[in-house]
Image (cartoon, rainbow, N blue to C red; front, side, top):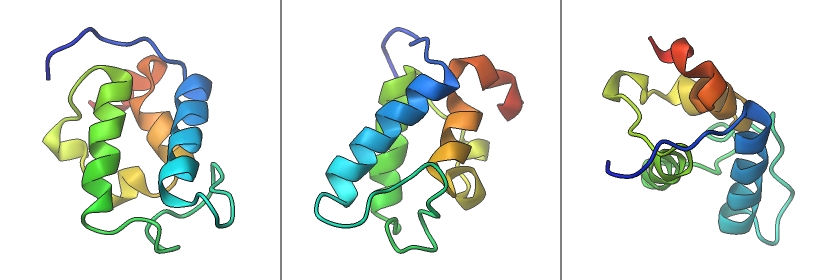
Amino acid sequence: MSGAHVVLSRAALLSELLAWLNQRFAPDGPSIRADTPLFASGLLDSLRILELIAWTERAIGREIPDAAIRMDNFATPARIAELFATEDRHALR
C-alpha cells in the first residue's frame, strides 16, 4: 500500500470507524457501537470484511499484516481500534 502513515489514536480511529460502519452498513437500522459484535450480529460477512479491511488500511495508512487478518481481530469496532491504532502498533507483533 502506498501512502503516508497516518497517526491516529485509538479514540480517533474508533470514532471514524463507527461513523463509517453506521453510514455504510446500518444507515436505517440500530446504531453500531464500539461493542457491537460485527460477525455475530450479521453485519459482516465474507465480502463486507474485505471492505472493512480496505477501509482500515486506508484509515491507518498502512497494510494490515496477513497474520492479523483473523475474525477475532475484527470482532468489534473496539477490537479493531485497539489493534490497529497508531499507539497500539506493537500489539500486532
